[in-house]
Amino acid sequence: MKDVFAMWKNTKMVVLVALSAGLYAALLIPFKGFVLIPGITEIRPASALPVVLGLLFGPAGAWGAAIGNLIGDFFGSLGIGSLFGFVGNFMFAYVPYKLWINLGLVSKEDSEPDLKSGRKILAYVIVSILGSAACALPIAWGLELLGMVPFAALGSIITINNSVPSVFLGIPIMLILYPRIKKWDLLWTEIMDEEDIPVAGKLSKIGGIVMTISILVGLVGGFLAALGVGQGLLYSGFGAGGDVGTAGVILIAGIGTAGLIISAFIQSMPKKEA
Amino acid sequence: MDMFLYMDLNTYVHRLDPRTKLLLMFLSFAVGVMYKNIVMLVAALVLVLIYGGMGHILSNLKRIKVVLIMITLFSVVIWSIAQSGETRFLIFTLEGVLYGIMIAIKTNLMIVAGMVFLSTTKIEEIAEGLVKIKVPYRGAFAFSTAIRLVPMIVATSYTIIQAQKSRGLDLESGSLFEKIKKYVPLMIPTLVSVIRGTNVFSMALESKGFGYSNNRSNFLQLKMSGHDYLMMLIGLTIVAAASYLKFDPTAYNTLINLFPWGDFA
View (spheres, rainbow over the protein chains, first blue to last red):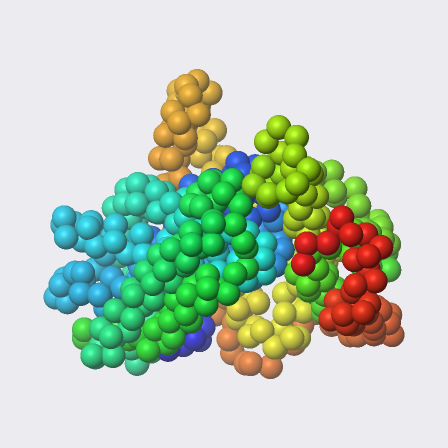
């Protein structure tokens, strides 16, 4: 996670944080009225952006997604959920760019996210879905912990609400933006100092695997525990009743959330080639 | 049209330090999270409304009324069906209605507290307040710049939409899905035109000495006054009293016995 903090000393990365956040917020705000769960979430075509921003701008995209979501909340839904939303949206962009390489989905020789092959498109779809789930996990866990919204309902709604735009809108956006960003030398690996880009190692692979397992265990395990106490997925989660704030759900989803954050710290990325 | 909630007035609340207002907002969140009791949540909401009234910004409630009404309707309808209870009529239960009201008040309390903060605090005050509470300057700068960029990005997208309309693009006809399909390609020029400015923007910043020194001077000087300490003291006292009431079994049972229908802890 060294890159996440080291990037702040680079002016261009700071500007990319601001632009990413501004773009994300500007696309979130017009849809604030298309509510899915009032005060919590709404229809979000803007969810197409975090994965793209993460893959192109790395840590700047992750900070941009987190700040952009917070600014979006300023337009009528700022609340305690915004704190978890900050973490969740950070992970929404952070997880895809980390797993893009560390999970071994693309070859190390040709790892640029240009989506020019079927393998890269498949990798994009996988990291988008994992990123969406990584966004849902801390938010659903946090609001379950506070006894506000059932975990199974919120977790499933956010995962789907994020996955669909990030896959179906994200791929064309990526295909159009990538060549331009590359031409303008704005890829994060081109901007950041070489010593700030973490060096690859076994730890990166382990970190990637731990991150994936944490997301899946936290979310799927949390769903199973939640269904066990009478909750339901999607909107049936509200209709099913069930206890909100039960220890089992909080524990399993909490372990997943903790694993997600710890794995972020132990991951590294390949060193930029000279 | 002004996109932001901030109202430029010179009231007691507006003059408070942004750190004080930030603390008061988080204290409101704390009470909202702590209680599942209608009476206590209503009391907290009334206090937040009085605080907002002192800032003369309650007219902004009109701007977020749709959100507040949606939250209330959604909570009451969903929970009145979902929550089991003895007093049933059709598919609804009275216990569920009360539970839904409690959840609605809890969520609305936090949103109104957020609205009061944003209506009485300028963006530059928020950014400087963040720096004062040790958020790194560059993070606060990115945050405030992003907020300023939002209206510019929206204006850019309107310009692009108008340009395409003038070339014959029909955005009015078709179903909702068809309309969304037409709007999606219009996102691309907006994204490209905003990102294209990155290099120029960073050069402009560095030419003005951005990042030269960690000890920056600011035109806006924040200073805590006696009023800030007084408001903080009042806020902390209220939360301390609420905590005592919550965690002292005798006091809490007295509250429940007074209003047995309103507690869901």
